[in-house]
Image 1: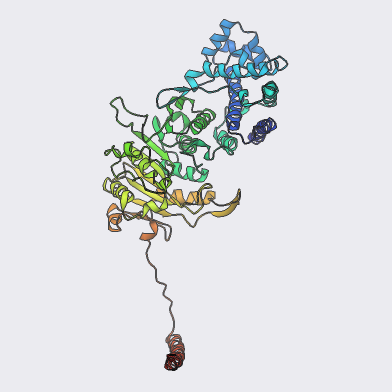
Image 2: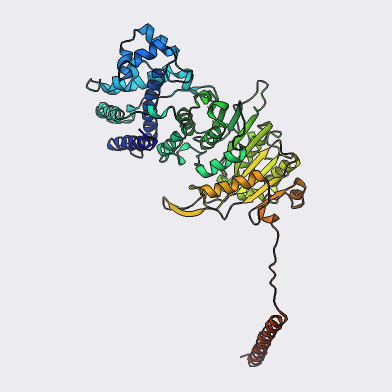
Amino acid sequence: MTNSTIEIQTKKLIDDLKATCASYGLGNDGNEYKIITQIFLYKFLNDKFGYEVKNVEEPGYRARVKLTDKWEEALKGFTDEDYNDLLSFLPADSPKLKREHFISNLYNQQHKGDFSALFDATMVDIANFNAEIFSMKTESETKLTLFENITIHIPDSMKRDEFACALVSRLVNFNFEKVFSQKYDFFSTIFEYLIKDYNKDGGGKYAEYFTPHSVASIMAQLLVKEDEDISDVSCYDPSAGSGTLLMAIAHIIGEDRCTIFSQDISQKSSKMLRLNLILNNLVHSIPNIIQGDTLVLPYHKTPEGRLQKFDYIVSNPPFKLDFSDTQPKLADQKYRFFAGVPTIPKAKKESMSIYLCFLQHIINSLSAKGKAAVVVPTGFITAQSGIEKKIREHLVTERMLRGVVSMPSNIFATTGTNVSVLFLDKQNAVGKVVLINASKLGTTVKEDGNQRTKLSINDIKQIVSTFHNRQPVDDFAVALTYDQIIEKNYSFSAGQYFDVKIEYTDITPEEFTAKMNSYKANLNKLFAESKVLETEISNQLGGVRYE
């Protein structure tokens, strides 16, 4: 089965699950995303378990499983002792299932009464059985397990059994086993398709804005050069959402060579990020996924209580938001928010520039060799006063600016704000700073009723190669020293450094004379018309009488 075939079938499964929810009155319901993502994940874990069982290292067990076409049937013949022993041979980050957890087992019991209770109990038991692997935490150390009761979202209790049967019946037509040994980029596409209808404003006041893959790819490629030898590094996002940026950086570094850390105030987004980690072979990082308010209570700290330092930080923080409830707490942390915290306005509190707090938190969370890529409103790069200017001065004074890429308009689907990506590098003290104006790149398309700008593969290559080459390109990029930036009052806008060009054209003396005579003739004509108008205006004024 090819990747394209499995992708089509996987997307069909997602659509079928949504159709089932709609049939039972849950279409566009606030709980629909919980049901869809949990059922999809149950299917994924079931097939992942089967894949790992078939490839267990212990030869005796592997041979017994491969004696039959269906691994579920083979495992029925294991004694309890052998079965538990088999589980010990599975990889540490592999799901562990009891035999009663298998999809085939549920499918064969659909005729039994109170099936919805059995179904929910199975899901909860899977979550508890795998709590050490898949549970994530809140900032107060409360564990959030993988699954919860599903059929309780059907208000009519008489239809819950029917609903549970309909969900299970969707899961038996194909499996994921063919793609587990291949590159996990397949699941990035699937994840985006899975959550596309739910990755909107439902995450609470820190609603996530989905970062386009083109922007995520650029951020990752500018932080990590192709074929760069990197291992055992930490990657962090303090406003992670569902993890698009973290997945991009993990893919380019290598999932087995980095550890992910994150925090996000939205429980929904944090659970989506956990799902993304499971799909993308990053289960080992789930304990580092924290649901909570990064600005007020940053979770990732050293034993001494200081902020933990990270090698790579990527972030697309919320730009403007009412955080007046917590502003006083942040304002008291002078060292952490060195440039200041936005004040609380008398009106339009939702316009408070919360991204400035996230940016300062990121600066303070970089390791000695740390690099960061942060999405900011383009207005940040030229603001002539306030917190914005202080942060820019700090980045130049501390010699930690690597570059800025100003993106085209409408690159984000959910906001019309023009954005730039700020690149920091604690090891760029003597290097050139590259400023790129990519605002003219991309193609305008209409998507979901909105105008969008899409960057092509060639557009992305142009940005990446220019950034890494650190060479100026006419009307596109400049490579500057820190002193040159200081001379321009700390402006990070490439356009302010472009040379002003005057076009010169060679002409003959005869052509010059002809042009000058033409100009004189036109001027004389205009002067004559002006005199006529002056006389007429004077006569009109002379005729004005007081009555």
